[in-house]
Every structure is written in structure tokens, then in C-alpha cells.
Image 1 (cartoon, one colour):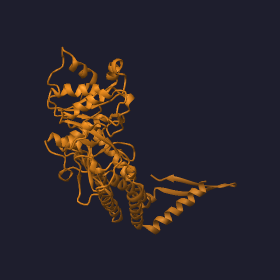
Image 2 (cartoon, rainbow, N blue to C red; image 1 turned 30 degrees about the vertical axis):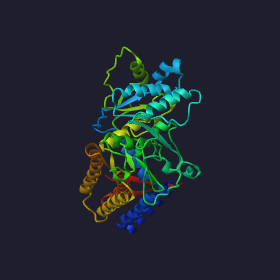
Image 3 (tube, rainbow, N blue to C red; image 1 turned 90 degrees about the vertical axis):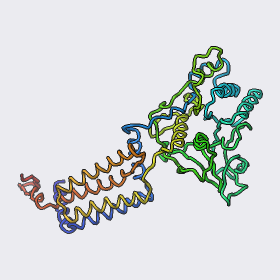
Image 4 (cartoon, rainbow, N blue to C red; image 1 turned 45 degrees about the horizontal axis):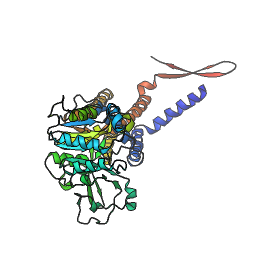
Length: 438
């Protein structure tokens, strides 16, 4: 084993003498190829970006405060238990929700948004359904979700885009194009500018970071529920062409779960129906009221950048908040910036070693520059709502710096004297002694 180590050491010495400073060029070329493969195939840099983004978003110095005019009426476990004796656990007869809407409307809310899909009729309570439909048909500020199904099923659907009221279309839009989606069962909900998708599309690692603001298929523009509600709050009709928002909006989270103002559905429902009310009669005046659920049994929990257990209704609230205030997060990313920044750092580091820049100064400059770039990313997301993704390029530069540093130490003349090779022989065998010279 010792002889093998000795032979390997001698081979490395010969190799370094032969390559000299050209080693740094070869190393940079290798890193360039690996980086290009990652950008096009493996996407390791993208995964690192997501993790660093999650860390910085979760640990911002100051979070943007939730809009106080957004209230979540929570069908929580307590509500399910409180109303179970009279209406069953879930689903309740639609009459319950109809009474809630009718009573809340007396307080003149800005909007009432359902985070509930009403896909089918309640065949056991037709009168209840009729009452609910009558209530929402008489309102002009109730909003309902469309559940967008997988686009691969579009050709199997009989629902045409042209049948959905309020959609905008391009000049060459296919008038016969079909869409796989679940619309509200109730005719009173099928109004222009009152419907939108509420689908959440996680990234490849299963984490929700973005919200699809609109779909653009077959020349038709299908808005999301946050877009419809956000534009309604600005007293504007939904027009995709005039929306200053990206199709996939990076969410500007307002904090950990339950950062918004929550009220229990059963508490509000009971008080609204009571003759002796204890709650403010202006509790929902000019508010965006979102009706959804955090009950564990209804399984509306999403893994997000902020928490692995994040209420789905609060994801919707965050998206509405971002659209309303236009303060969604922006990110400097993409293949081109990633490649260019990586090339810059890789080759700048390489040339510093190749041209033998003063080692102590370069060590200080390199270390401080990498830390400075990370600080720049952190400051950007705290002050400007812009995330400058430099994680991948920095890691490429650090990896190259580490290998180049080891090579530089191995070839340094002063350090070559650090090792001395001696041979000690006896009658039976020979051993190689490696000892430092101080």
C-alpha cells in the first residue's frame, strides 16, 4: 500500500509538471461542459435555486403584511363539529351556504369568493340547491372556481371555450376548441367575470411557489380566480391583454400559515342568524370574503416555500393579495442568465489562477465576492421584491476554486519542499517514509 502511494505521488508530480498552468484551462473547460449539461439536461442548478429561494423567502427580515381587507371564513374542524348535528359533517346542504351569503350581503362586502367546487347537484336536497342558486343569481359580487383538468383530456370534453361567459379570445382562436374543466353546477354562478381557475401547480419538487394567473390554450384566455377577483376589486373587467402580470406569478408570501385574518364559519353563521348578535354588523363591509376550509378531513393543504403544511385557502388569499397590490415577487433567472453568470465566475476564477494573481489578495477577493453576491440576493428580496438567483453560478465558482486551490498548493515550489521521501531498508523489506520538513 505504501509503495502504491509513493508511485501515485510521483505520478502526480510528473503530471503537474507537464500540465503546469494549462491545468486551469482544462479544468475550466470541464466545468463549462458540466454547467451546460446541467442547464440543458440535469437542472441541478435550478433545484439549488429553489432551495435557496425558499430559505431567503422564509427568513426575510420583514414580510409584507396581509391585506386587512381580505378575510378568510374558515370551515374548520370546529365548524364541522358544531354544525354536524343539524346538517351532518360534510358536505352540508347548499342552503347553509346560501343563508350565509344572504346574511353577509347585508353588510355590503366587496366580494364573496368560494374556494369550493360545486360540481354536482345535491339530489337529496333539491330545494336547498334551488335556494342557493337563487341567492347567488341575485348577487353581483360572488365568485366561483373553475377546476381545470389535465389538458390532455381536452379533446375528450364536450365543453367549448366559447360556452364559458366572459373569456377573451385571439383573432385566430378555434371557436370549436374544447376544454376539460369542471364548472359550477349552478346557473346563477355562470356569469361573465365571476369565474376563474383555482388550480395550484407545484414545481418539480412538489413545492408551491407560483400561481397560474391565466391559461392560454387554443387562442382562448382563461383567467384565474385571483385575477378575476383582483381586477374586480379595482372596478375593472377581466381583460388578459391588459394585465401587467406574468402568466405564472411568483407568490409574495405574507408570512407563515394563518397570517391572514381568519374567522370560524360556524361562529359567524350562528351569529348572523341570531336575534341577539354579538359580532360587529360591519365586520365584512368592503371586505373580500373568502370561504374555504382548513379542516384536516377536507385535505386542502399544500406544501409551499413557507411551510410544508400550508392551507390551500390561504394560497388563494395570497394570490388575490398579490394581484390586488401588484407586489408579486420577481426573479432574475432562466437558462441564459444562469449560463452567462456561471461562465463569468468560472472563467474569472480560472484566469486569476492561470495568470498567478497574488494568492492572498485573490483569496480575500474571491471569498468576499461570493459572500457579497449572496448578500446581494438577500437584500434584493427584502427591499425590492426581486430575487437575484446566483446560487448555481456561485457553487460552480466555489467548486472550481477549491480544486484549483488544491492544484496550486500541490505545484507550489515552496510546498514541494514540504515533503521528503526517504527509504529505510532492512533485511526483510523496504518502506517509504513521508515526513514533513518544517
